[in-house]
Amino acid sequence: MKTDGRKRARWSAAAGIVGVLSLALAWGRMPAGRTLVPGPLPRELSDLAVACLASGEVRPALAELSDADLAAIVEIVARLIGAYERADFNSFLALRAGDLENASRRRSGDVESLRGLARELAVPPEELRGGWVEVLERFWNSYYDRPPILRFVPEGTRIELHSEGLGGRSLETWSASFEDLRDRVPGPWIQHELTVPHRRETERVARDSGPLRWVDLELPFETHGGLGARLVARFVWDGVLREWFLQDAATVYADGDRSQRHLIL
Picture (cartoon, rainbow, N blue to C red):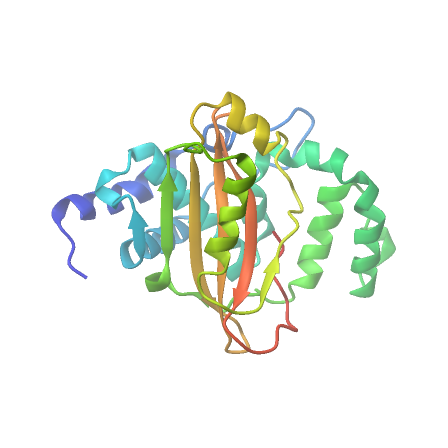
């Protein structure tokens, strides 16, 4: 792939920008009372994310992205790689840092069911104390006895940043457009129920954050069983809270048996 000097500079800058961004600035302030603060983004993860952007398809072109948007996209891709290619729970949390306290409240009625799933994996009951996030971490570490993804495939990456707003569409029509993205390549799919939902409803974000901005991404990957699959996700910019959040996600398998460790989103 040919690379002009400006693009090479942008890719190098991307890793540097991500390296110096604090999580407080990139993802919003941690809620009072939370002591779990994800660490800084490892350089090797940012390098892998930059490789995905360099090898894949990005719209608008990399040279047309602002530094802030480029840094945010690199951060999102890097954290997804860390979460699922390395089974790193802190990478999972880094994309949801501002929503942990709210998720603990909203999912409090589901904690016992999650404890039951963890007990099925032979997690001792005394290790399942705490709320939703704490039990989710213990389940995550037991469920992922190895990372669920063997490797992401950088050259298959597809990323589109949208800044045009709804364009006269209803929010329902816009939400349904995620299905077109999911179904672009046919195959059995899992539509994920988000374990840590955003603390503000998307309808409110669309109403009070200016023109809606979002990132649609497709990250192809290989499973340990040799299957091809895609992680399809939509991240939305909350202009009031100044952070990106996961709004929708699906895993699409090219073929074969899906009885394996699936992605927790």
